[in-house]
Length: 85
Image (cartoon, rainbow, N blue to C red; front, side, top):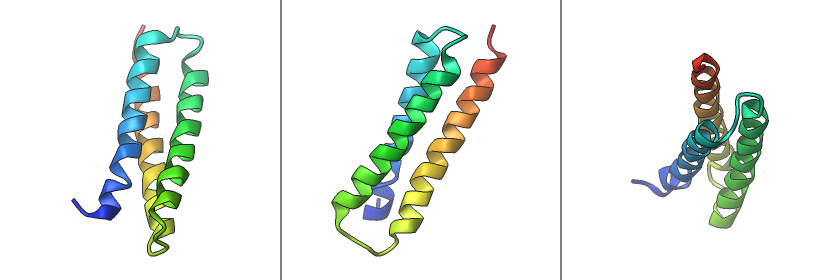
């Protein structure tokens, strides 16, 4: 795995873990609030990881991939949690 991919995948894992935890522990009325908080954590983690690399090459692409992937994961989780009773 390249260093670029190693800086993106942890953010996707954070989004997946956050979505699962929200699905397990939050009530139906709180789901959207907690998913928004997970997305904020995804954005902060993205910038924390990308800025800690100290490599400017491909910063925007890596940040966009991390945040975009996290957004897709959380959008899917929102749809799944919406369909559950």
